[in-house]
Length: 512
Image (cartoon, rainbow, N blue to C red; front, side):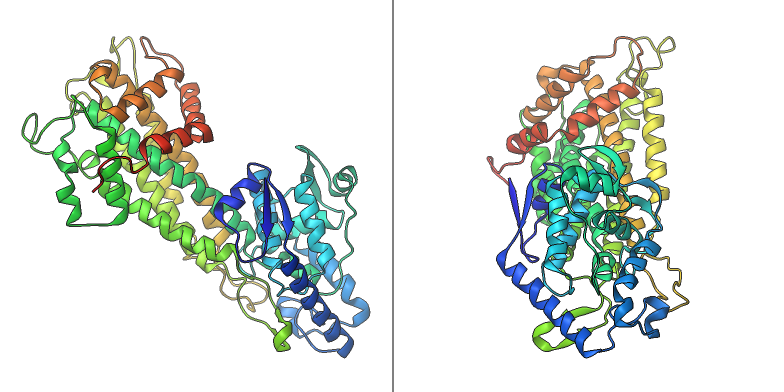
């Protein structure tokens, strides 16, 4: 498996292949030529003694401080060391692998003035599994992800810390074990390495990948719950949805109809009740809105993955060096806040369905808390507590990071994005949402055992059977947290998810 870096064609799937599946990376011949052209232009500017930000000047508020040619190399080294200010737990290796790839891809556009050998060393690190240790906190999201990317650059020069084949060690040792020669930074290179949005974008890409999977699981789990509660199928009649044809809504109702096809547990309008609660009746509208939000976010990520986010940018063909603001993470910050809200809502409505499953006043004559011997057994009483706690936590985490800004660098950098904070929060919300949906799936399956699994719709029966392959019926109380973990692992398993997609998300039946 190989990903060719061009600077313009990287896809979300490419990032996942490199981050999770350990695909190797190569750089295109065109990109090599563009990088060399940009570097040659930087060398010309140095020879001519031109005043260029970050090349012959200091950084941030020190942009008016001139730096001599003799101090240019030391300037870049000092930049990396001084900016490595990250704190907290380190980012996962998958996120760092994605970050490395995205930084390489941005540099491959040829607007950063870095040497080709420096980019090739980064590729070598990725291919030989030298993964820098990057603390998760410390980025303002403008000028890009300075602090975390500085930790990445430390390993490139033989400093800092790294994982080599999964083992943590100092950066120099990791590079030596991998047979990679660290680089010595030349003029402009330190700035080229750390000025960009690649950390927040990497987290965003991996978060969206999980969000896309979770959205599909959510549809199928909701269908199973609907059957357990004798849900009214009239609300899923295509005629209702065609008069409000949001794409995500139409996709969700088509999936629900597939899942409940041939069901003997769903009901007609007026047969048991006239209307279902919103958490059942409005599944297409709520899930669909989250799907549409994620689709919008992915379009923005596709652009950001293939963009030059350095400062200054080198336009060799036009004989220009421009100090602009492409490092500003606002597009990602707003998108990640939107992702947080959309996925928090997916979990929110799931928890409401779980409450209906366990509450004897709402669950259509199922046993209280889905247990055979209530009182002696608590059943799924506290499972709902756990879901409610996660949903409440998500509501707090959904407060938008992008509306905050703290001036920095003596007010030279007076508006920042907080995009990396927004991305980290979105990732955490999605992790929480996995558990909320897992709890609903377990509860819905338990409810079906008090009914008749043979009466389930085609897709709901598949969901029930997959659950029972991993988690057995609860005759008596047992530790639930371990079961939650099992189910989340099922949902994240790429093989099972592929089976879900191929079985229930292909257009093999009449669609709306």
